[in-house]
Length: 194
Length: 194
Image 1 (tube, rainbow over the protein chains, first blue to last red):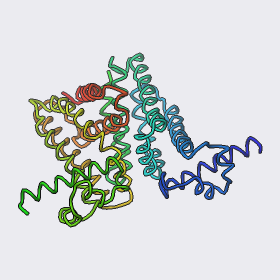
Image 2: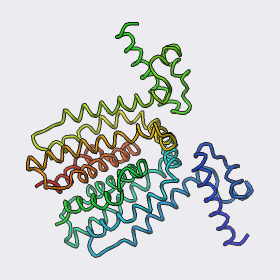
Image 3: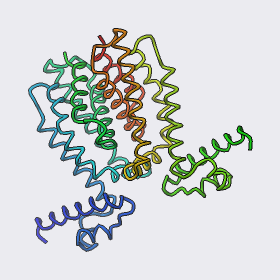
Image 4: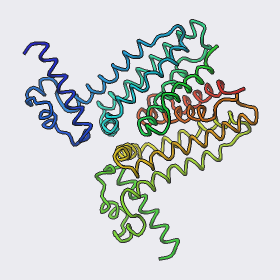
């Protein structure tokens, strides 16, 4: 099997797993179901993924690295502008989360019972906390932000984003979440800006 | 059956359901299991609760009304002080959430598939949003807060609280969450205070 062909098969299995998890749930979807959906043999599945759990972690990491790529492209002239600008990717995150939500919640249940899954679930929060803390430090260095504790300010921003995300996926039509995300970040930046 | 005896039985069934949901999960725990755990007949169960779903909603509402009671007792001299003071109930909310988390997540999965459960899950967010917006309005009226949009400021606070809560239950030993909650609210209030 060529390298390209192998990568196509891997992507194909990931797509099939995402669909099966979204429809049937993580627990109910079996490796057999995923193979049938993808039209691949169990041998092909296990060539790419050692377990159903590993495919779930790959889906989670794939989604998060898409967000990472978007965040990196968001750098504006000043740090406060960068943070406010970041809220523009909220609609895309919501759209992607919508079909993943039940699966994501099931995954958190698994996480509360399994150390490996727990680590994979926790890792992104720590990753974003560090990413935001670095940006805050840059803002203090450039003189656009007050000399706050970067770790605390990063935690405020991450918590705000997570809380908006949770409400947005639970109650998508309850509010204009993109507008609220934008205004909320603006309020926060007013408090942090020099 | 006396009124008092009846209320004791109801509380007893709720406790038993909470234990069964926490151990076996919401889906796996049957009404039979709950009756066995509580040592009551199915007749007694259905006298108090029409369904497993209704007992779940009663547990959720009971937990939220405990939080409400704590929040009402938190009023300090000024609104910014009140919000910072509120973060002191975080440890108690975490402690109560710890055993309820897998159950709560399962409930959100159900919510994404069932209109009644969805409404019960969404209601508290709207309730807290209104509660916080009223406090912000009071703060503007008393002159301690800038004339911000109370709805937006309330959303920032609610999202911050939810995001901290979500991280706290997922990663209880990752950070000193009470300290972070306190510092985060202080940063936010610095931005909102006049």
